[in-house]
Image (cartoon, rainbow over all chains, first blue to last red; front, side, top):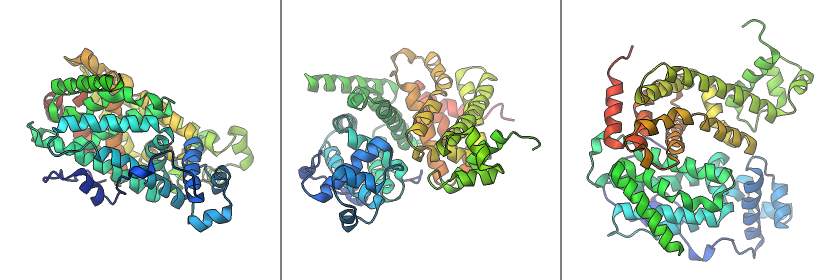
Length: 240
Length: 204
C-alpha cells in the first residue's frame, strides 16, 4: 500500500470504507464453521483447513478434494484453480469478520472507545476461529494474487480507522504519515507470533498491548497506557 | 572470489535464485547450476531445497545481526545506539536487495519451517530494542510485548518499502523507522524530539 495514503478528512461510516475497498459486506448468515451442505462449501472449508495445516504453497488440489470428499472434476467445475478456491474461502470468512468490525462503529462513539472495541472484537474473532486466523493472518498475506489483495484491503480499512485518531488534539505535524501503518504492523506481528506459537485461543490476552500500540501515536503515552488498562477492565467485565 | 567453498557458493546461489524466481519456482537444478556444483555434491550437503534455503537464510541473518550489533555497541545511550543499529540494518538491506527480499519477504511463502526461522530471527533483535525499557522514564509501566511490537512496526515499514520497489532507498526510511522504535518506549513527543536530534549532529 502507498505509504502516503492520506487520512480521510470526512469521517466515513466504516461500511462505506469497506465498500470503497470492494470488500464483501458482512453477512450474518455465514458464521463459521461454514455450513458444509454443498460441495462448494465443503471445498471452501477444506482449503481453509488444509492450508492452515500445511501452508498454502504445499497444499495441492488433490489434498483439498480428498479433505472435502469431492471429485477433482467437480472441483474444476466450481473453481478455476487453487488460488480461485482459496480466494473464495478468504472472501467468505472476511465478509463475516468485517461485519463484526463494522458493528463496533457508531458515529457518536469516541475514537479511543472505537479502537478498544474493534481490537477486542478482532482478537475474540481470531481466537474463536483458529482456521480463519491462520488463513487471514498467515496464509493469505504470503499466497499472493487475489487473496493477498483481499488481505491488503482489510488492512487498509483498519488503517483508515486508526488514522482518524489524528482528528483528536495532538501535535499532528510531529507524527509521521506512516504512524498508523507502523502501529498496525506492530499489532499484526504480535498476533502472528501468537498464532504461530500455537496460542491462537489466547489472543484476547494481547488486548491491552494492541490498544496501547494503536493509540500511543495519537493520544500520547500516559493516555495510551490508561486506554490499555481500560480495555483490560472491559475484557474482564465481559468475561465474568 | 578465490577458493570459496562449495557450500558458500551454494548458499549465495540460493539467495540469488530464490530472490529472482521465488521460492516455489526454484529447483535444485537451478541451485546447482548457479553455484556450479554437481547434483551429487548438493545432496551430500543438503537433504533438499528447503534445507539449503534454511541454511542460506540462517547465514544471511547471522551477517545482518552482527552488523547491527557492531554498530549498536559503538555508541553510547539507547537512542544513539538503536539509531546506529537501524542505520546499519537499512544500509545493509539497501546494498543487498536480493538478501533483503529473501530475508523479509520470500521467507513468508517458503513454508512453516521458514516462517519459524523468520520469527526466531526477529527475536534476535530484541536486546537492541529492550534496552529502551531501561532508558524510558515509564519503562516499568510499558506492556510486556513492547519490544516485539516495536520490531514488528520497524520490519513492517521496511517490508512495505521493499514491496514498493524502493529497497535501494531504504536508508531514507531511517527517521520513520526510528520514530516507530522510540514511540512505544518514549511516547510521541519525546520520540519526535529524539528523531529530530539524531538527524542533525555527529553525522559524517
